[in-house]
Amino acid sequence: MSVGHTAVTASGPVVSCDDHDDCGIRDVLDRLGDKWSVLVVVELASGVRRFMELQRAVTGVSQRMLTLTVRRLERDGLVTRTVYPTVPPQVEYELTAMGHSLTHLIKGLADWSRDHRPAVAAARAAWDEANPR
Image (cartoon, rainbow, N blue to C red; front, side, top):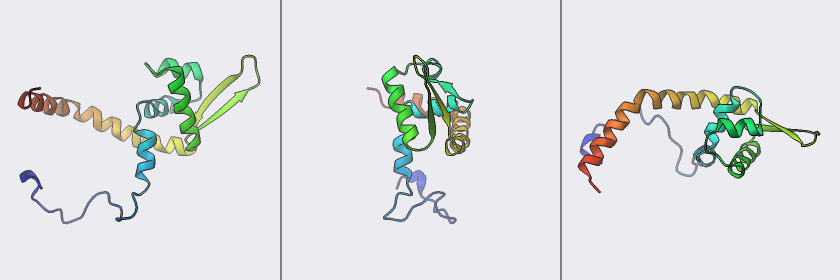
């Protein structure tokens, strides 16, 4: 335990799991901890998107990576994929109810990130100065 962390919290941890269960958090982090999933969910929170609309909106994602990302989100029940029998086929993606419920958590993370961006930048600068490469 570090010197700065000597106080004991009387109310217990905010989040905890028993020793034999990770509360399912590993599955969630596997899905949402990648580079593109959260950005796709954020884009789909605004409504139905066609594949190319998603690709244009999620700057920097390749066609292959976007395909893999939406497939994984679909497999996890967060996104639905609808194919229309046109030539060429038109494909649309939409958040499911479970996917929409996730947007509230992502908004909280985005709000935290925005509110703490200056403090994180200052901490990084201080650490980099104290630990030159």
